[in-house]
Length: 203
Image (cartoon, rainbow, N blue to C red):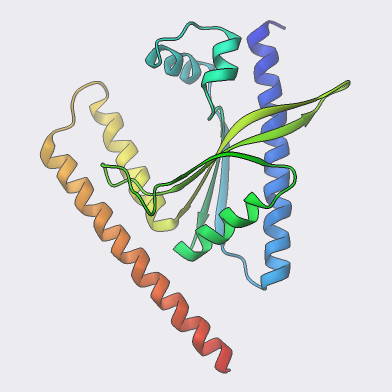
């Protein structure tokens, strides 16, 4: 097994640890609050090709040092929630975990990207328990609503179609307009959720 394969094996261990920890946290949340705020959870490991392409974009050599120290999202987990308030509840729950170390937070919901992209990102470290030691591997957790995930999927597909060519301004403008519509929808759904909670208390 070469050095890169050994590193990738550790990331596989880290992915398994993170999946297990998130599953436990979500089950504890449901037990404590009496409802499940999560629609679904997806996880993945970047392919070697994607990793090498990212190193090239960063103008870095293809070696294990650069993989470990300059790429934080080889392990990726995406948690899809129903409402914006659920997103922040899940972020808070993950942040309180003793087995996940939060390195950095990026709140693209409060401060969306220029493209209109919205999501909450946590860059974290996850412990992996090897034979003689404990190591920590980086991972990225994205928490977003169903509506945000729909927009991000649409944006990704359109970006892929244009590949290396510049996306026309009118398409950029359309996408940004859709992001505003998505934001309004999420806000209205959050209001609906609050109304539901109000009436449920009165029953």
